[in-house]
Image (cartoon, rainbow, N blue to C red; front, side, top):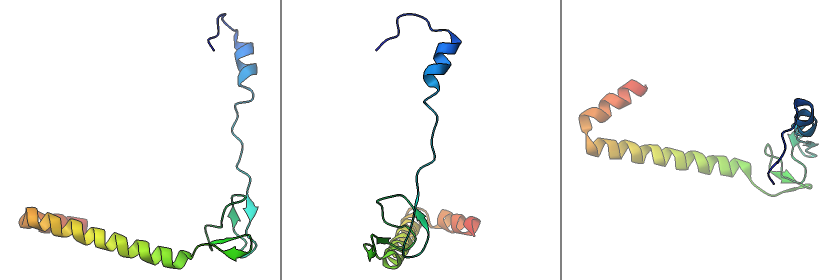
Amino acid sequence: MVIRMRHNRSQSKQRRSHHALEAAPLSTCGHCGAKHRPHHMCRECGYYNGRQVMDLEAAKAQRAARMAAKREAIRGQAESIAPNEAAAVAESKN
């Protein structure tokens, strides 16, 4: 809806008085004691409502393997394009 009449500063500030941000409510994990969002699993241990819903150790290992494979693929691709430049890039990153 378009405001048809100009509002003075006081009216604008009164309207905006409800626009303030609030801190998100947090719950305490019953398993590890970490803070997490209500009705969501704990991101530290993977538990929700007293049972494990996600194995975070396996997920972290899987992600690390995926990222290592991706780095190797990028390195191989760079070497196939320009072998001399790939060596220079690898040396500059180390």
